[in-house]
Amino acid sequence: MRCYLVTHEASVSFIRRTIDFLTGQLSRHHGAENCLAITVPKSVDEAGIEGPAIVYIIGERLPPFTRRPDCFYVYLNFSVVAMIGNPLRMSRGGAKMIREKRWLLRHKLEQVDLILDYYPAQTRALQGKLSKPVLGFLPCSERARAPDLPLAEREFDLCFVGGSRRGARRSWMPRLRPG
Image (cartoon, rainbow, N blue to C red):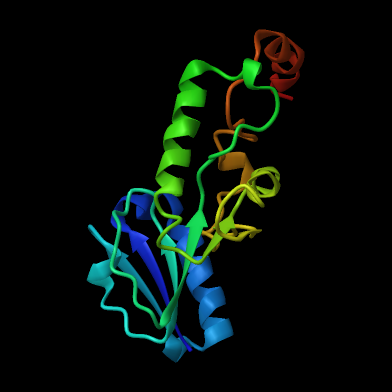
């Protein structure tokens, strides 16, 4: 069966290596001759999909599209759309962003048959709450094409993602001294 990985061009710069990895995995599963990765500027309709096919879609800002009756549509969700943990510990800005992302996802539900979600805790929270099945997947990525820098030439040894509280910084900052 044919397989398409349709990605909104606004998403490509954020997940280029993940797209490469997914394309490789889908090609191995469906056969390279049956799998096509397409980047679209505005709509899934621009992809020129021929059925029967499985259509994997990436891009939260993609508008509604024309569903083909002979296609199965899978939306790959990379956004946080569920409030996990204590909502009182969340900033207003964070809560607002999650609500906006959830709104975008809910408007896709009519058009897709399945949602693949990247965040295990969120996947469990969404299962049974949405009108479509939700399954988890592990987003992986292809290695960088350039060779890794030798350790002596690297500017940083580690990287923190996200914010930190003042008390936490006091505990780990002294440990980051050279040597």
